[in-house]
Amino acid sequence: MAHKKLVRFAELKTFRNVLENPVDMPGKWNVFFANQNPIILELACGKGEYALGLGTLYTDKNFIGIDLKGNRIWVGAKKALQNNLMNVAFLRTQIDKINEHFAKDEVSEIWITFPDPQLRLSKAKKRLTHPKFLRMYQQLLKPGGLIHLKTDSPDLYLFTKKVIELYNCKTVTDIDNVYSIQAVPDVLKIKTHYESLDIAGSNRIHYLCFSLPQNIPGKETDEQLKQLLKDYATAD
Image (tube, rainbow, N blue to C red; front, side, top):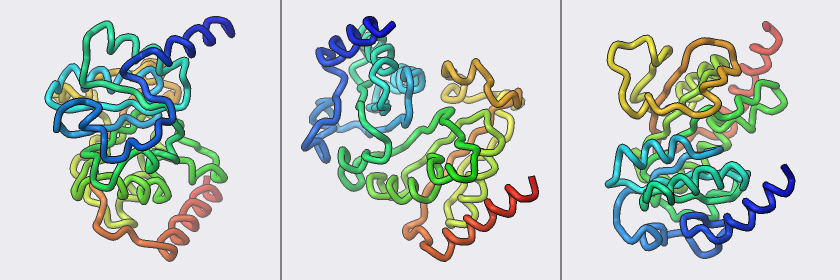
């Protein structure tokens, strides 16, 4: 297995659709894709199933899967090359460093699909819909840019709904059980490896789409959220 990873890491460096901790990329992604189409990110993309699926559905948009795990990115990048998906690329970096790679207002949408829900209270700040991350996203999202969350974790779903409420975000779509609705949108039919595992054991998929306010509330609201999390943990 170790040898296989080393081979993949070496091959990854030769892929034209993969950038590993690049420098001087902010503001240059449309040059990279050689078009002026919208830039959409998939965070913690793993094998990039969503970036690949969205790239197939929307050839008039550019998609970038972001993850630190090179072994996983290799799978998605390889498939993109094999299927000639010129509008799909991968960025190997840490999520908390994405602002180093994108300019202000350069990104149109962000997808967060089946991230680690970080259920322990001590790890709440690592949840990708925590206000810590929302402030990062605001720096690179266009005004009114959308954030999509798809998860099988009821805890992360409810946490995100509370964050949306407390921080004056605008809910665009809220679906408590995706596969219970009659006409599931094509964008929500895309399945990741983690969705098939149903790790949360909830037997349902939650989806939220929302946008950020012009000014995200600060420390006072952060303390309010922190207290709510403590109260929830105590009650549980």
